[in-house]
Length: 331
Picture (cartoon, rainbow, N blue to C red):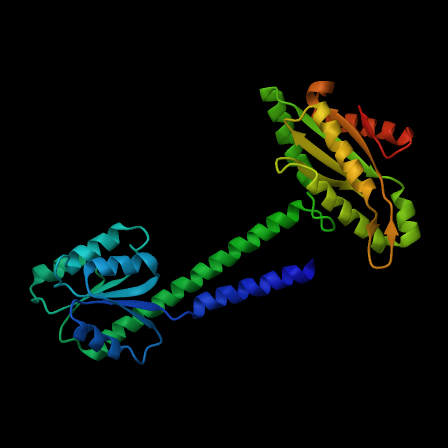
């Protein structure tokens, strides 16, 4: 299991690094191909990926499907000018953060410049463009883009680590089932839900028969194999809405929401038969293992508290063991 976790971690780190190291994408928009070519030649020395668009509509299509570090946008274009294109980009949540620099031969009147900034541009350059000025501004925005991508990757990793820690805190290391600590939380929630809405809640307490003998005969390593395999068969025998816990040692507990005593008994019987049907094996050993099961339900026994529900299941389990084991008993 650890090897798999390490592999997943390495793959995730590699994925994050790839995102950070990806060449930033720049969209250049101009209705004249010669202008696009001139701009593209300016960026030959900058590690970036250039995309072209010959119209405002084409530019909007491009930004919808790509994560651009910035857009260089001509103002004077047929059908949809640069100002309208920029306003539509700013109005879209997905593209509102992309920096836009207008590159235009339009007059330098202040009203045009103000209109450019009002449309959402971060800068406004006039043709013919000074290469050093343009490249200097582009480099600044590319650095900001890389910084943003790095922060996003770090945030993604923090969220992933948080999820892993949350998962670890509620799972049993050996079996992968929920642990005793999480049982307290889930049982309280489900018991209160049954009290409030009158729905049923069944509890099954399961104990592997003669497990000490398995450890004594085959060793604790094989004993761990038995516990893991039983947990696997257990989870395959219940619904996605049910909860499986390692209660302690070789004891396991199931909570079956909205399940009556008959349904719970059948679930217990299915698990018992599944375990008895096939030996548990590893490379060196093979052993027949059975399980005893105690069953109770909220509407059948009317327990006053969540602890009483477990106590009733434990009482039924004791009866199953006293009657010869490898059976299901109702409390």
